[in-house]
Length: 347
Image: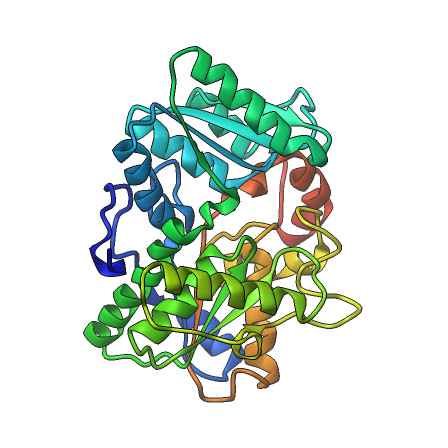
């Protein structure tokens, strides 16, 4: 079936806003800057996973599944959105998370619990596949049929959500009479970035797509994996598009302070400065694990004029996840900086 005819359920509120960041544009003085608000999709506060889940949940329902299981870190945005999507369509939500149960639920875990998810913590990542198999067997013995979604919803089915998002952006550009030269997004499990590369080529978009990694990765390795993923999705839907690793654009940042930070989900003061910059200038909140890192890169790319030349127009894709700001580890880490950033008076 062609990519444009693939069936899906209704989860998101579209089109998500495409807005000019007037204050950031004035602050940097390099060219018009825009933001695509995929943090506003819904359900369960939404984010980029919603576009993917519309196709994945459709497949789960069509194959007669009664439960949905997915994986991620303990503060996975994808997990939280998957739980919300499952609940909306009457499916049992199950999470298998890499990490320890600290005994305290905050951030996404708090929301997962509110929605009634069954949560399994796995301390040893090497045992995750074994745990998934055991958990699926447990539910199937109880009469459920479990649909397993990969991390980030990143497979050929989920990637369609971001292939089609490009058409939405092109329609908004035409409606608003604007041009976009560059789109900057996050790359983690590759579904969003890979989908947008394919969508940009399939719909002949006038912009390129540049990604920022959320975890440290050697240069060259990520490009090959993204290209392989894009080509697999293209082949699945007979799109006739093939790319090479050399065509994949990833911004890594300085060697001594990469955009990915030291590791996934570790508090990073440089990323936090980027988060505060957008909050103070546009009243828009980012998260410290994904979008904060990407926006830090966005600022650098615009200011330095390497990939984004002066006078060119850049679009930042906000993929959601701001609830990570309310995880205990990040709240504890940012207290001093937040106190210094505002005035508090006890009366």
